[in-house]
Amino acid sequence: MKIARSIQEMKSLRRQCQGTVGFVPTMGYLHDGHLQLVRNAKKENSVAVVSIFVNPAQFAPNEDFSAYPRDLERDCQMLENVGTDIVFVPADTDMYPQGYNTWVIVQGITQYLEGRSRPTHFQGVTTVCNKLFNIVQPDRAYFGQKDAQQALVIQKMVRELDMNLEIIVCPTVRESDGLAMSSRNTYLTPQERPAANVLYKSLMLAQDMYNQGERVAGKIKAAMAELVSKAPGAYIDYISIADIETLADVEEISGKVLVSMAVRIGKPRLIDNIILG
Image (tube, rainbow, N blue to C red; front, side, top):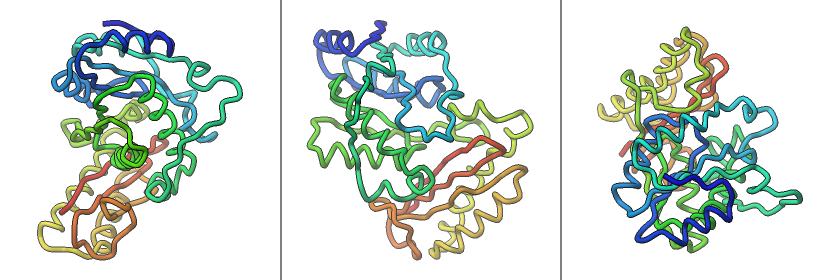
């Protein structure tokens, strides 16, 4: 496994690659959800590239950029164990040199869900992904369903900017109690951790209600909210049932919809989702 610590080094290694390149962009502090993306990239391509970059542009001033967990040595060992070929670890100043002021903005679907709570977030996500795609030049890039809105935004960007790149969205990897794997789960205290699976429980409640014939989105959301409110320390940021393409909320479920939520369990803010229909 090779480690590229600069853009030029990554570009040089890319020129040496033979066959297709699968790419997994991450912010590090890896868990098995990330590793499954890497396994898929390795299985479906000749070369698997992973980036580790805690992107300052997607954090608001009041968010946890400085506290975001980091352990490069641990991450690299995990990546080597699953057969990663190249790890790209750029510096902040390499990605955003002094005077940097070019941004990629996807409008429409970014105004909902996470965009309402974190208005500058997706500008940072789309810009850094655009830069990483230009540097790594992958044939396929792999994202997790847990960050469903992010995956939809990236797919839209790639499609509308005519990028020669396929975006692969892989199923959410979960803990044994259903909690979606996330680097932010490390923020949960031992007392908060049991309450965190209320997100998954409420999504399964939505699934059950849908399976039993309920199609009024408001009724499903109300039942989910009631369940979440019973969990110790839980505070709902949003619960949404939205059109799978536009992410606009629906009143009546008639086609495929994204059921998604953001909930604070104590201080940590967790997100999760499922698709119905």
